Image (cartoon, rainbow, N blue to C red; front, side, top):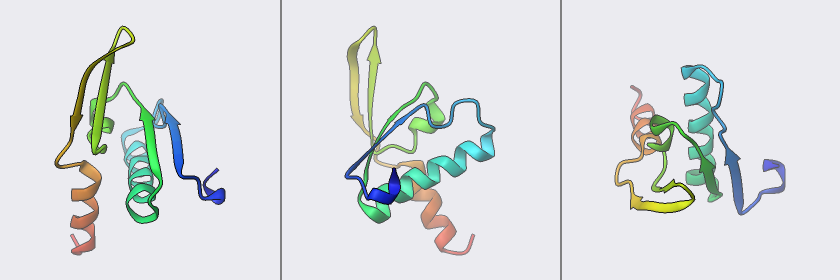
Length: 87
């Protein structure tokens, strides 16, 4: 799906049933696709630590939007910058 250079990538529970390391690798890949290639990533997750990678988090409860917030410090942004500095 990424070969076709989509404008939007839908990811439904992309880290479901994965261990912590693989989950982080998947999230870094999705963050990189968004940051480096400009692909919009729309992700569904029940895991707050995976949602922390998002710049915007929309939370649904019983099919109704409960909150729609911006995340000023996405995990991927900090982690990638930290790696780029050689840490």
